[in-house]
Length: 305
Image (cartoon, rainbow, N blue to C red; front, side, top):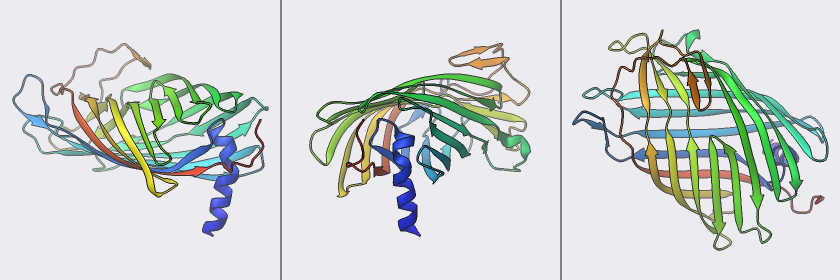
C-alpha cells in the first residue's frame, strides 16, 4: 500500500511543482516567541505555535490530478493581560484539482473550508469557506511565475487576496527562491550537499471564534508577520529536511465583538474598518522555530523541457 502511494505521489510531482523538482508532502513545525509585552501594560505573554501541513494527491491521468490534504495548527497565548492562556485551533481541508492546460501553463484550483476557534462549543458558525486559484507559467525548467487569487470568508467578513509569485533555481542548483506573495517568501543557498542557509518570510491572516465565558461573542484576528533566517540539514535522511530558524515576529492578535465587521478586505487594505478593538496591542518579539519537512523529489531522468 505504501509503495503504491509513493508511486502516485511521484507521478503527480511534475504537475503540482511545475519548475520545482520536488514537492513538500508533509511539513511540521513548532515555534515559540520570547517574552512578548502588551502595549500600555507591564504584563507579557509568550506565543507557542504547532503547525502541520499535509498534501495527499490522487492521480487521474498524466495531466490532471486531484489534490487533497489538510492543515492543522494550535496557537497558545494570552489574548488579554493577567488572563490564562487561550488555545486557538485551526483546521483547513484541501480539495481541488491541478491540470496542465498547455506545455507552459498549469492551473491549480482548491477549495479550502476552515474550522477555526478555541474549539469550545463548536458549531457551524466556526466554519469559514475559502478557495484558491492560481496559474503557473513555466518560463523554463528552472523558472516559473505564478498569478492567482485567494478568497473566502472570515469572522470579520469577506476577503480577496491577489497572489503573485515565482520559483527560481540557479544554473548550478545552489541558490533557490520560492515565493507566493503576500504570504510566502523563501530564499536559500546550498553550502554543501547536506547543508543550506536561508531566509524566509511568512504573512499570516486568520480569525478564530471565541466561546470563552469571559469574552463571549467575540473573535480574535491574527495578522502576524514572521521574518527569519535558518539553517537546514538532511544528513539523517535525504528526503527529511530539518530546519532551525531564528527570527522576528510582528505579533497581532486583536479581539473584536462578533458583530464588528468590515465591508471588504482587499489585501492589504480593509474597507469600512471601523471596528473597536477589545484588547491591548502586542509588541514584536524574537522567534525560535524548529521545522521538519518530508520532501519527494521528481525523478531526475524525466524529460527535460
